[in-house]
Length: 82
Image (cartoon, rainbow, N blue to C red; front, side, top):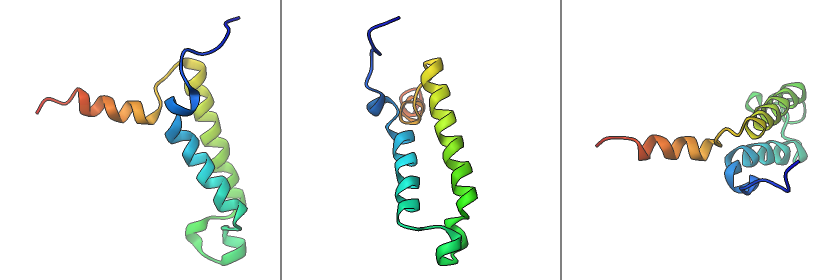
């Protein structure tokens, strides 16, 4: 077993972690359809499903050594021929 990763997870997967953090902040603030009646907030069940999906996708990226969204977007611009 290795002594650790060669990169900072918070830096490499910052976008994904920020999405999860934002979703948790919205839930903490009571931003669910059942509380405010706003459909854009989604139901509690929908928000939980979204969180599960976000966490699962992030863990797969980490497990498989895949780039984070920020790195994927950066590559699109770096490899673009102008």
